[in-house]
Image (cartoon, rainbow, N blue to C red; front, side, top):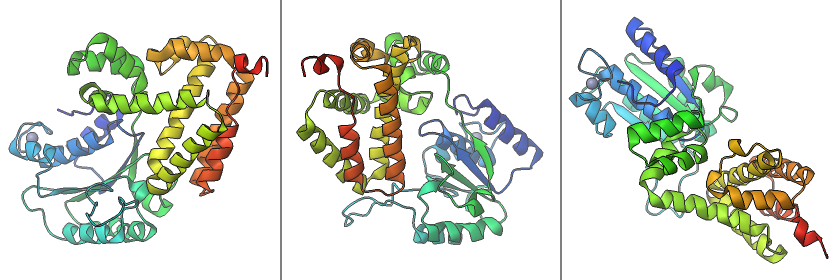
Amino acid sequence: MWQVIGQRKAVSLLQRSLEKGSLTHAYMFIGPPHVGKMTLAINLAQALNCQINEPPCGECNSCQKIAQGKHADVQIIGLTGAYEKDEAKKRTEIGIEQIRQVQHSASLPPFEGRYKIFIIDGAEFLSIEAANCLLKTLEEPFERVLFVLLAKNIRTIPDTVTSRCQKLELMPLSAGEAEQELISCWDVEEQKARVLSRLCQGCIGWAISASRDEELLEHYCGDRDSILDIINYGYEERFGYAARLARQFNQRREITLEVLNLWVDLWRDLLLIKTGLNGAITNIDIEEELSQLAREISLLDIRRFIKKIQEAIQNLRRNANPRLVLEVLMMDIPVRKKERIGS
Ligand SMILES: [Zn+2]
């Protein structure tokens, strides 16, 4: 049974291709983090190597080994796992030496299964050299070898690579679907399921992890509190916050971009509340606090500031000076109405 949640379109396409024996040699699964890309890739690897008639059964020796990451013919290549002790920081890209190892391994026949599957987790992190190296393998595929590239978006991946993969887009679930799934399949208590299903924005993997790992949720709430606090702070604290984010950006840019996306989410919630669409907000657990804030900031200011955050994200992606971009953003935070009175 396919274990990925939702994603009926992608699953039925893969299932049909499996039945007809018409799988291509390279797929690219595209979608936001935690939407189910890795689960789908693992399921596909299981289906190709499953030892019973209804693949992927999830129970045979081969399916279990793949799920546990112990199958010799299924390899995951990504940023994690490439961490070396003497490195001051984690890798920021998938390097050419990782892809060369893949090429070598792909040239050898499967060891214990029928197919070799290489899952490239975070194809947008392939260095230019690594992407070019991979391209050669995609152009001259080996028999019984399948590549699955996972990507959040394909903007930064060379066209030469994307054009050689069959692309499948994975869509976030609706809040209702996610809530139902959490309650019925993951035993999450109703109120918690309601909150998590909104916070995850359809990326159910995050909600499942957060329902089991208190720290993950605490971390999320901590980031969110900092953002809400900063609105009340003066320039000194705001610039301190900007400096911390800029330092983080220089080490792990994707984490900083995630924080900025959280800024967008919170201000989008304010916009929704301001226009009376409270039912559509993400952060339902702090609706009251957000409603108070929405009362004190004009609709025009909220709209303008969301645009400013989005511009800041774009500028960071274009390699503008992170400290400058973030300091300017901090200065653009709208003033609360009650502060304006008397000033
Ligand atoms: Zn099986």
